[in-house]
Each structure stands twice: as C-alpha cells, then as structure tokens.
Length: 79
Image 1 (spheres, rainbow, N blue to C red):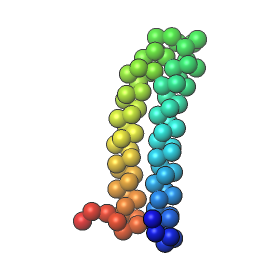
Image 2 (spheres, rainbow, N blue to C red; image 1 turned 135 degrees about the vertical axis):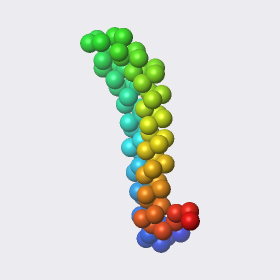
Image 3 (cartoon, one colour; image 1 turned 180 degrees about the vertical axis):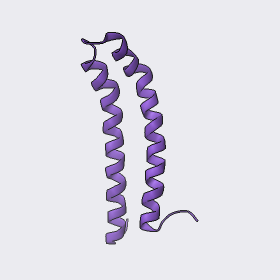
C-alpha cells in the first residue's frame, strides 16, 4: 500500500464504513434478539432470524452506494 495521504484517507474511510456496517449487522440479530426477548418474544425471534437477513441485504445496498460515492470523491471510480 502506498503512503500517499489521499490513499490513506480513502482506506480510512473504507474501513470506517465497513466497521459501522459490521457493528449494525451484529447489533440487530444479537442485540434486538436478546433485548426484546422479555418484552416481545415473537418479534424478537423474528428480528433475530428474518430481520437480520433483511438488514444484511440493506447493508449490502448501502455499502455499494456509499463506496461508489467514496470512489467518486477520491477519483478512483469506474468510468
């Protein structure tokens, strides 16, 4: 990897996006599935099973959209 500041900024932004996507993906099935269990057991089970899949799909589309914008910002987009 190059030590150019613009490359470091690009990869720092990329890692930040990936980290937040993984945190959200972990919180939804585990956090809501566990925290909602005493209050709404059926909904908590649904969130832990199907809800996490829907969140994962939403994260995929968000990541693709955000990375395209980040690529354009740093001039490495596909023409």
